[in-house]
Length: 188
Image 1 (cartoon, rainbow, N blue to C red):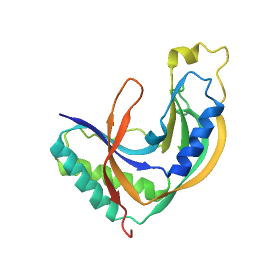
Image 2: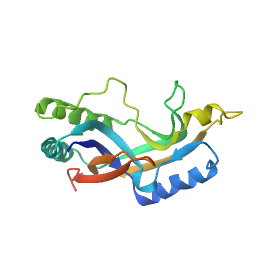
Image 3: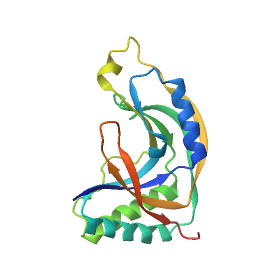
């Protein structure tokens, strides 16, 4: 059985609660809001892997995590995304700081360099750290008399002390996420 796996940064409970409050302001929109326990930042999407590949992904993530000290990620705006394209989601846009970009790069290089993870391919698009708050129901969204302008300042900093290897189980009412392994950053 193959698992759908990715590496993510999870959010503290207090920030998840603040993000849910934002959703109440826009609950009338034709979107599917992300469940509180599913709010995360995907760092590297890997794809469908075997149990053996998943164990290698956990090992690689542990090794990479140990090379970095804990750090913070800054977030600034809630808006429709992706930017400069027809919107597909409402997201919280983050800032790609140097540490975050370096961790992503090291993970990608280690995953491709292992030769043991067949499903993984490095994404060609620029890294845009974000947290998906809602997925737009496209047909209903385009039928709105006027599409809403969502651009709200939402500044805060998320402390990052681990990288999480996660599994997503796609369901009709949204994905269910499970942490397979939490890999502490060095210095913890």
